[in-house]
Amino acid sequence: MLSRTADHLYWMARYTERAENVARMLDVNFRMSLLPQTPEQIEQGWGAVLGVNGLQDAYRELHGTVTPEKVVRYMVFDRDNPSSIYSCLLASRENIRAVRGSVTSEMWEMQNSTWLEFRALDPEKVLGSDIGEMFEWVRHRSHLSRGVTVGTMLQDEDFRFIRLGSFLERADNTARILDVKYQAIELGAKEGDAASEYYQWSALLRSVSGFAAYRKVYRDLITPRRVAELLVLRADMPRSLARSMKEVYTNLTQVANRQSGETERRAGELYTSLRFGRIEDIFDVGLHDYLTAFLGKTDDLGDRIAQDFLVPVLAD
Image (cartoon, rainbow, N blue to C red):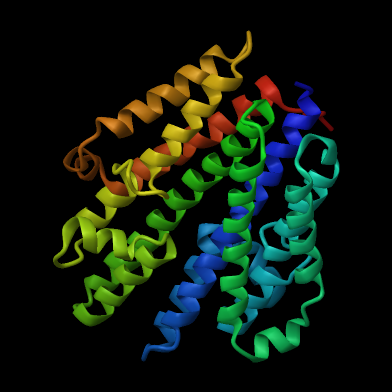
């Protein structure tokens, strides 16, 4: 398989997944901002959205103060923000356009129509009405992308690189959301607002479609340790770290080449540590430190995948 084809398919999938993740975070934060909160809590919540994507400094250089409207505009429609929904959907469409012959016509038509429909949106009209409908639309188009991929593509190397990109991006995002939100919620918990803490944990679960799963697995009160266990160690939770890394490892084994042995080993080691991990051990280390180390390992995997399979990045 040509590395250029693998590169385009891998990044198409990553950008599609990233657009969905941004929409999830914004939607949950938007709904939370409708609840009674102090100005400090509102700013903290929207600042966390920027923090998940590492965009605090870039945002403040452009807009200064953190407000819901400014953050939503920046994270949805800003063409110069590489993590905005606009930029992600454009990048996804451009990547699949470059390899139209390697995907089914249904996949190309779906990705192309997603971009064309989003580009036709009037930002002022969207921001001035029910923006929640737009976030739901982005999530739906991402679900549709995965469904069309699984339902129409031959499960060859092309398919494997799409899945590899999707799940590595998902692992990275779930870890970032859990880390940033957990720290913010724990800080608020020290102030003794039990009701606010409950809604914050609920919002975190909903941002990864985990609220119903949590209720089914644990049934009773939402606790920090159980939330972390669900999102880190449970492989039956679709957006957990364990499930995502299982998919990364499985798809890596299907595209392995002569130089990817170490990359495969590291992915397998990380997946195994999640498969047999215990939440008590994670909290002994400290959840923040554990997730920071995990993100370092996924960044390393991303770099190694690029070296082993994708188009080399030329040095300046």
